[in-house]
Image 1 (tube, one colour):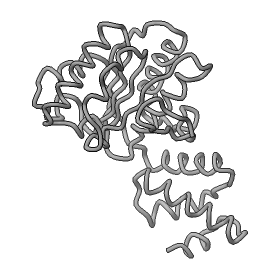
Image 2 (image 1 turned 60 degrees about the horizontal axis):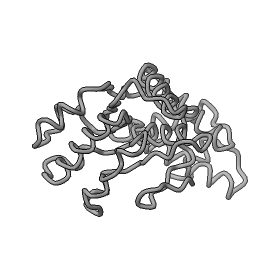
Image 3 (image 1 turned 180 degrees about the horizontal axis):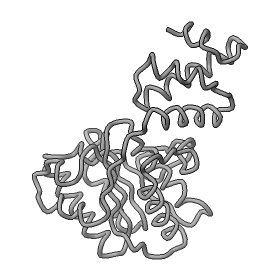
Image 4 (image 1 turned 180 degrees about the vertical axis):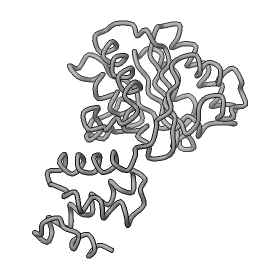
Length: 235
């Protein structure tokens, strides 16, 4: 795991652009990657805000953490990654001084909506980052204008940059994503097993990937090949 400079929050080693199946999100991923690479080269990003929104388990956290990993390559940039799902355990003061960094990633921004102190602190950070030329990458379940912030100027500021919806994968793309995830974990997931999983289990990415982890552990523990029979034994 990679140590973060703030809050002892760690990034997942598995979060990378290489193992993210883009599907219909190609433009989003390429714009994000280009902006982060510019930051990593010490250049001012042409973008000030990149806002990603989508349903739970759509891949927002994966992409924000992948952006941090990419920025850190070569050791030139130490970005901040802050999951605002943990806002109740933090003070808005955690956002102070972050404008000194070239890139800040704020996940689950919608979780602080209607909290006046947090909204004010976030708006102030957006202004300071903009003035210093820093990049803000944000993730939420809804687009800025639909989150329901009390502070209307905050929604407007977050919407000034590039706002992208994360489009869900088709069943064919989910099948490909599962097989890619399995290969990254070091095992092969036969197509017939992947299709069985799609028919019998919840289809959101988080549930599918959690099941893959269980399949991998069961295969290693029992020294059995990954088959439909093995998956049935987990039911």
